[in-house]
Structures are given as C-alpha cells and as structure tokens.
Image: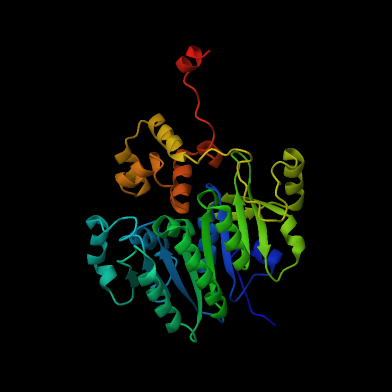
Length: 354
C-alpha cells in the first residue's frame, strides 16, 4: 500500500486521501485566498514516525523575512533555505547582503544557500541537485518553490518550463513532496497546460470580495475523477482554514448560481473572458497608492521591496510575483478583479466627451 502523508488540513486529507510520496502540487492562486496558511500547515505537519527535511526556495522575499515568519515553527536543523532573492530581484543590494553578516546566519545550525549567479538557472540547479543527493536515502523532503511566477520573472518562460519539466519528475522519483505556487495571469496558456500535464496535483484557490474563498481540484492523479467537479468553500479565522459544511456550500451555490462555478473539473485557463487587452495592473496599483496618499518609497517599504521594483511594476514593465501580488491585494484590501477592471473616467473627462 502506498504511503500517505498529511497535507496538514484534515478536511482536505479526508477528501483526497492525503499526499502520496512523490506528489508535486501546483497551486493556481488569486490574491486574498490565504495560500500562506495552506503552506504553513504543509511545512509544519509532522508524524510520529517521519522526520521531514524542508527545503524552502525564495525568489520573491528576502531570507530574513522567511526566517521571521517560520523561525518559531520550524526546527532549524531540518530547515534549509535557498536564497534566490538577494542576487535575483534584489540585484545584490547591500542592504539585503548585510543579512549574511548577522550571527544567526553564521551559526552552523542554520543552512542557507545564497545563489549569486541567477542570470540563468545552472548554479541554482547545481545547488538543488547537491541537496537532492544528500537526502536521497535518508529522509523524506518537503520542497517549497516560491514561486514559478518568480522564476519566470528571472529566467523567462522557456528556462522556467525547462526547470519544472526536469525537476518535477525527479522529485517524484525521489519520493519527495513539493509545492509549486503560481499566479495564473502571469503565464501563457501553453505554459499552464504543460505544467498541468506533468504534475500530479493542481489546486485552484479563488476569491470574490465579501464571499468565502473557494478551492477546486483541477487535477488529482491517482484519485477518483469525481473529485474534480466539486468546489469547496472556506473562511479563515485566526490563521485557521475552516471549510464550510455541505449545506452551507449548497446555499452559496444557490445564491450565486453557476457563474462562480464555471470551468467544471478541467483546467480552464481563460480568465477574464473575451477581454483581449494586455494586462496592465500597474496602473491600478498606482491608482490605489495615490488614493492612500502614499509615495512609491513609502509603499515599497511597506511591501519590503525596492522603490525601483515598484516603479517597474507600476509602469507595467514587470508583473508582481505571486506572493507580492497577494501582499499588494491585502494591503489595499482589494479583490483581484479590482486590479483588472477598466480605469474609471474622471468626472471632468466624462463631461467633456461627446
């Protein structure tokens, strides 16, 4: 019988039967869906018999933020951090490099690998392969690649897809478990289709303002296909995921009809219907910032990114990565749709138009 590992959330374990060793789980996310809590439960759940080594890859946030978030939850001896941020998006900024002079980093109990050459993925792959060889026969590893969107921003779609198509089957053979989050709007349909074809599990988290969040399985390899046709609603209370009962879910379906449940059990990657305009969420981020009377420097500080990075996002030169997108949406207390709706026409412009 195949060994089963808990995902950390009893409701989901009951539905899908937990994870099989070797499962790669791709999360297709919208802001405001609290993926970080799903991740936290996955990383910190233990069993009586198994000890897990956690390999956490960060493309989007500085290592000090990761350690501050998980420092009290994870045993440092079982936690390995691969820093692809400091010399990636942070471009070797002295402020972020200074972290490596701190005593906690220089201690032998904390293992951090800072990848200095991120122009292309070879050094990153070499580091990862070394760790995979180290733990091949010793213990089960849990990987978090945060995120595919962050990888694509650094390496482009082709190299990111090549890395995934090579790594996903390798982790399967190593009997590891891996989370791969991405923000759907930042990737092409061909990219998403390839990712879905290769991985074992695809989970979509969606969000509508003032309504419960929704979870839908888009792929569950080795599980009954009937599980793909059900939407599961949940709320979050004090960092706990609370799924609604069948009756509560039924009431939501009756209230919203089929509009919220479009897409069935298949991977439906058309997102905003017939809207073929290029994604320019930077304009909306700038609008929301100005409404709060914040400068770019002030907002960048609150989001823990550089003003230059925020400027590129607002000018639509780059898309924010998945975790950053989540933070931006939560900071402004806006739904995902708010970033894609047409910009309102100022009253004076409206009056002048004929």
